[in-house]
Image (cartoon, rainbow, N blue to C red; front, side, top):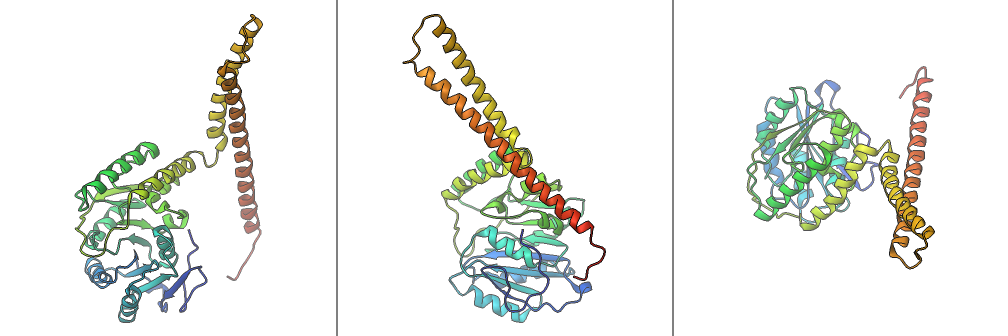
Amino acid sequence: MVGRTETFGSATTLPGLEIFEDDKSEPDTRPLVSVVAPLYNEASTVAELYAQVQSALDGFRWELVYVDDGSTDDSYARLGELHAAHSNVRVVRHRRNFGKAAALSAGFAVTRGEVVVTIDADLQDDPAEIPRLLAKLNEGYDLVSGWKCTRRDPFARRLFSKVYNGTTALVTGVRLHDMNCGLKAYRAEVLQNVRLYGDMHRFVPVLAHHLGFRTAEIPVNHRPRVAGKSRYGFERYTRGLFDLLTVAYLGRYRYRPLHFFGGIGLLLSTVGSVVLLYLTAIKIGGAAIGGRPLLMLGVVFLVVGVQFFSLGLVGELLTSQHEERAADRARNRSHVREALL
């Protein structure tokens, strides 16, 4: 995750961003809840989203962080008007469309609340559900995800989503009905430890679970689309398959790569060795083996198995060096007696 920044002027040093913000609040007036709303060409809904969040969070100290992910309509102009009219509106703008994960990371980087809520800006997510997410969070959870149990989307999208969520639960062991629901609530420390890149925003509950955070899920209201159009296509699920494999691998084998690659290498090497021993035995018995495809198969299995095992050793070497550097940084910090930062 991008490091948290407390004060900005009209621009920031984060790459690809512009920020509208006047952060003059004292620490005791900082918001309790930060709502992050990524958007792309949602000019017609941004004002209504603010009104609905305001109604839902009446009585809370809150802020609404809009992240304009390179919109080509007049979304940014509308956001500028909202920022000028409301002191708790903050706006981050990307130079171009970088994707939802980058938009969320940019929003998380400027939040000030103890709790962060994410919501899509197209009004399909119902802001009235936010207090219920916060109440569930107060039961001792670190992340609460919404579940669009009655989903107002086309049948094909609902079908693909059901298959996707079932596969994700099977592979990762995190049993959520709706992994990619845009409506989620997080304790701030979750987002300080989870790094988003690519399309990893879909798997934040899995990443948080692997780090030891407690996750929960509650049913939420999902509304029909009133403006704009969905930008998700079939290719999203194709990319999601590769992201799922990445998350599953990092969660289980990030700190022990030899257990993964070594296991595959051992299996292939064993099969190759058995095949070659068999061919050696029949060769001693007088049979010709030079033209047998089984000979090539045995050699390939043995060589590829050794390569997988070697890849696991290289992974262990890289992991150990990374951990040593992290330990060195920790020791260096422990030598510091006093610092003015």
